[in-house]
Image (cartoon, rainbow, N blue to C red; front, side):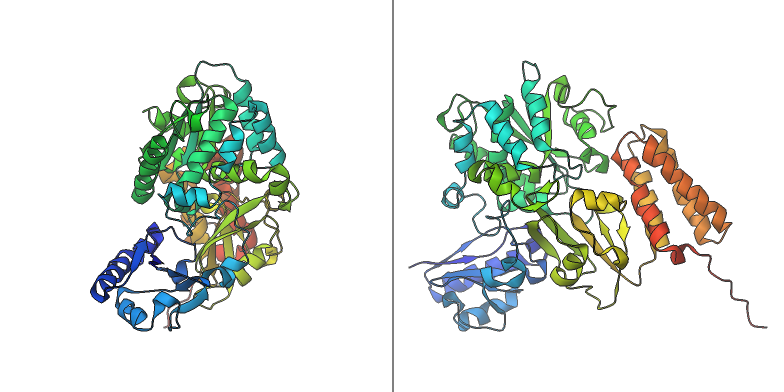
Length: 518
């Protein structure tokens, strides 16, 4: 029987040498005349073990990692095709603690299947949600998504069902589904992992959204820095179209739905939905004033659903397993699971899907394993470059939208960046302002000018120039930006700045001058 060997084609694994490993394995199979084949899967999300090579055995899939091309011959000599022991052997993949303790719903197939095999996708419960949706009324689908408690996973946390209902009820000759795949936050890679590791789940989620709202056209807006995701999604759309999943008759139904892949030019502000829509229309990516809401006047002035990749990719399991099943996970108003992305100075960086409610300390210390340097954790930034810095004193904060908001933080896209005690929080605050100044679309004064003044003021504090006066000025600038900016770029930049000032005041104190020796 042909033995199947899995080598990831995910961008993270490729960056760590997966292509060379796959080539070496293919050469060894040919040279030894073995009955084996290589399947390029997505990543499991355990990046400290990449490239992670798996072998399908009678006992299950056995993992080896991290594997280098130089290790391949030794793996074959040790009999790894039968799951035999080797220094790199990690045992059964599903029993690796980081993976075993997760609740994988949205990412259940990621790293398991050949991303471009519809046969694999169907085998692992793919298209079940879409098959149910085509037999339901629009309002029933929207009610199911609403009752599940699904909220926008892109950062805003807005109830997905309410957005869909607004578009469903809106009048218009043409409606659209726009997938926001402009994943630009630091420490975020969940969108990319889905697109590269399980693209059909996103296609299925978009088709369900189209049926629910009456939209017949969808766009996936992917940042240009994701060439592998763009290539995989483009091929997956063609496969889905050829198989009748997309087109004028979705799965043989009376519903039509078409998808196009579009790439952005890498502007951070195009992660904001109205800037994205402008870019999608071929215009400069600047923020639109609201109202009108995109749900009523979005792409080309028509009713438009704009959802994040993970929001849409979570819909198929909701439709397949039911709203109550999904809602049973989580806490408070944060229902279902969230793919937490752990990065920065951390021992075990990767993607960890779990129900809302774990404390920040559990995520950083137990799942992430603390810092990679072995030094104490000083701060954790949650929510990308616009997220607040939390000190250890706040590590009891449960991972849910309201709990973070209550402590002047935000979950955002659920990216976590860990810093050890060598981090200078004044420099981090300055970076936030500089980032905003560079990425601002320039439309509103608080963001455009406030961030520039913020950089200058942070520099004065660092130079010891009237530190108390300038700290007060920096706080005042933050207040103006928070309440006066047109979108979240300027409005959320104060979160990292003020949290750094409030939780790490020692880093903003003037450095005592040391007199030169006589």
